[in-house]
Image (cartoon, rainbow, N blue to C red; front, top):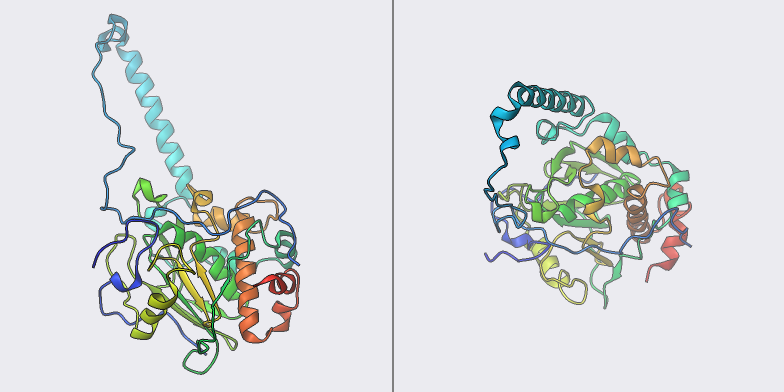
Length: 338
């Protein structure tokens, strides 16, 4: 199928026969820091779609005599050796600090990272409020049938792909919000694709193969492709119908794109409330560490966006549980949802 040229990909374009599982049922404060655009829409191309525009070309220029290799002799060798040693030391430090991204890719989420993301302090959440993120929830017009899971609970359907940096950034907020209503199992680490034009290697989680249990809500994630654009999950006919109906104008500026979320057929979230550029060059551990700091310019949009999603879910659950929906800033944000 044709590949959209911009930030997101149509869920139906992913092949494969894996079921769309990964799901299992069982006033806003002002930000402490700067402001953040409401929903981020940008380029998220698969790795092979376009050559890098950052590739440089070398030009051969004659060197003066004092730059010739024989002029410096052993001194050059000493400098080179020193540089090599520095890079080795820095590499070892990076690995020790959890920066070994390639080796961590595909591994279960470390307990320390999971605890930080699923255990946001109420004080930090209240202080951040909306985090500079304007209301991302778009009310669905008309009176469509409520979207429910197998046992009748309100359902949140998520469409994304591992190669997409905007999906990568949005997942941090989604995990925070859903963890307030239930429990994730089998979450794994992943990164967006390595294309330099796609905000490469944005560290995140994948919902592929995960499960979610809640007495208030069902969660149906569809990760259409891995970070190398290989197919993972194919949406069901019902899920594809949601994309065809709501992942288009007036709810989305680009038809059939990701990330896309349908909250119970009452609200649509199109795009990402977290600019992935903010996460550039950060490991999972480093991003998680910011979530305890209400002044962090990384934590503000992540938690602020999660607070909006939480408020939308509270609309679906009849403000249950009260320990989540009646607390600051959720109750205030909920009153502002259109």
